[in-house]
Amino acid sequence: MSDPTLSGAGPDARSRRIDMAPQPAHESPGTGGPTVFDIKDVGVFYGDFKAVKDVNFTVAKNEITALIGPSGCGKSTLLRSLNRMNDLIPGARVEGTVSYHGKDIYESGVDPVEVRRRIGMVFQKANPFPKSIFDNVSYGPKIHGVPRAERDDIVEDSLRKAALWDEVKDDLKKSALALSGGQQQRLCIARTIALQPEVVLMDEPCSALDPIATARIEELMVDLAEQFTIVIVTHNMQQAARVSDKTAFFSTEVNEVSDTRTGVLVEFDDTQRIFTTPSDVRTENYVTGRFG
Ligand SMILES: Nc1ncnc2c1ncn2[C@@H]1O[C@H](COP(=O)(O)OP(=O)(O)OP(=O)(O)O)[C@@H](O)[C@H]1O
Image: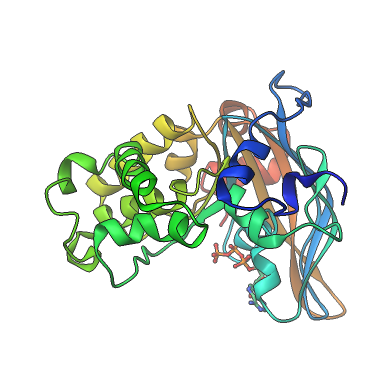
């Protein structure tokens, strides 16, 4: 690939960070903002099973996009296709096009490691390494060759952005496993943003948290969206309504022959519209609690 922006080309992480700074702006239909992802006719298979199909929507920069829908409709599968995380699942295959700033991330020559650095991911269950708080956040920059002196600044900056610094600044050598669940999830967010991604994918980041820790992460998401573009999978419709700008509602269609269910994107629109005046009756039934 001639364009080095996703090739991982460059001697160290610093050169890659510079590569990613200025990006061409693509106008997002309906938002006026630059488009980060343009997802066209995307389907994802696990072996012969088509888990989700015909997905088309765009993700605009510095917006929070929520993926909602009943269990098994392919939200997490689709989310993982946005940073090639599905590559790590044997038998998983993506069809269609996932364009990131106009570049197909599945094109040959694209480095999936670089894709995942730019498009970071936070998982359902906080998964800190059994290491100190400092080492958890410093780990990614370290393996990308960032010198220790710079890593100190990155750790502080990332913990501040993840709204955790004030709680841990005097305990950076403490084990991350000694933190509360909510603090561990904010630490995982800090660990993700330490790699200076542009996009943060979040797969049900609050599902293991109590309401107070959840509220804290929701506030954090809104703050982070000033700097990052966020795509979140959530089961919690109130959460989608509270934090997101755009919402994609997925449902399932039954394949009569194989008796399997394939996820489909029913509707994508401004969150307010999805929750007040959706255009599809399936969306209306779901958001009003009549289904799912
Ligand atoms: N690694 C896998 N191998 C095979 N099938 C999978 C795999 N992961 C998910 N699936 C299947 O793909 C479909 C979509 O699953 P996915 O987890 O993406 O849905 P979801 O909407 O995120 O569900 P939930 O809300 O329950 O987390 C389901 O039928 C699921 O069983």
